Length: 288
Image (tube, rainbow, N blue to C red; front, side, top):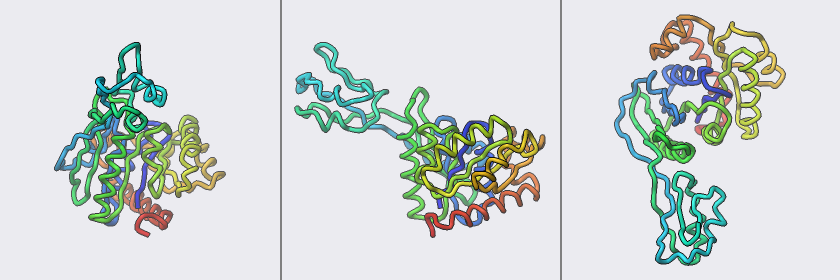
């Protein structure tokens, strides 16, 4: 089963939940950091990194001796990554999405694949669990291709070794977050009981419910704010599987890179029960 831990915004505690769930998961599990713009799951799980591979995106290269400046490619590209300007054809690799349409449509076969570096894919071990992490190159704006590379590696690992995966998704509801959750088996939304938390929780539901996956919530910093999130979840039929208390010791442990499930037997039992509930709700997932 692939479980994505998502949130409507950053700072709600999805990495806290991801790290704790990984440590209490009953059975083999791969921890995956798909928040490639700001990965931080490794700060809590302290994995041993066995390999770091560079990930590239195919981008067009033009043989100007063959190009007739017909503009077929520039007319096709909606991102203006290839363009004819006067008597020259220019490519803008940072704007290219790597679809290959320009190469396919070129009547002179003047375009071939080059590549640009997107970032790195790290693999390793955290205790007995596998660990995967994508890290976007500084200055690179396009994260989904790197995320897809991480997910492809994850599928290969799971096909080879079996087990489940806990995916720390990017925050928000934009393309990277959608890319992270769209092919998982279960979506766990982490939120907080405040008007801001409720607002972003609604946005997340609107974005992710169309994927028709089991969805549940965890309320972090419970005891802070109001009952708006609880009331909304009840109205929408979204089960709240766990409450993480608003506690100074938890905040202090987080700031020191500690896994909060290891702080006390009470907190560990919260995450053990959360893992059980996820398995029960996601019974139709990958291993079913």
